[in-house]
Length: 272
Image 1 (cartoon, rainbow, N blue to C red):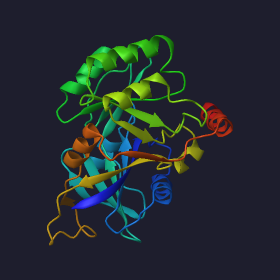
Image 2 (image 1 turned 60 degrees about the vertical axis):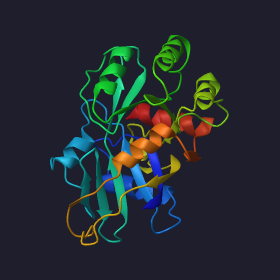
Image 3 (image 1 turned 90 degrees about the vertical axis):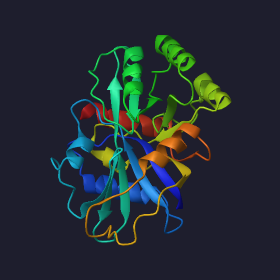
């Protein structure tokens, strides 16, 4: 089945968030142009958050008005809004704070890598994880100076099929993409986009704000599977992983911050 997927590729769902509000925000932000279009949030769970693992393991119940209707054993779960039947996929992923304070992420898997591990060792641990793709996400100041040199070293050692980049809404309008993004484009390295919600209550409205749009070919589900009423197995991750590595047809869209709105978000985060 050929679909269009709208993917926010860097989402934190903090424990104090109202998850129903965060999911509703994703629906508002990400358009649906046909009945087959899908929306997905790729999580970047930090150490101690465990949002995906707890939802998948029944340690955390879906918010009121939502239910889990399908699992992809390769690292995703599908929720449905019970009032409308609209589906939303949550895809497994973790963010790792390296010793150098470079933000490396695991996509499509959930490895436990201790915070403070060096960036090169962290990256190798990610790449040893079955089914995982490694990513490094943009954050203010973290691609400059010594960390910028380290990032270029990681890119030199790991091709486009191993390490992708994630632009975020925290890169304000007027802030140039810079040499790393230019290099990625020249190499055919995938650049994703994510909203990167911060630890503040107002940030529940951020998911889906900055995202990518991509074509995806996923298997048709069995006709007797009733996704609205019972849990089923479904497949999203294999096709999504292949699309992310290839980068074909991936378009960044949505909204980033202005310098003024970024300052406002960062102040709210500091107050929390």
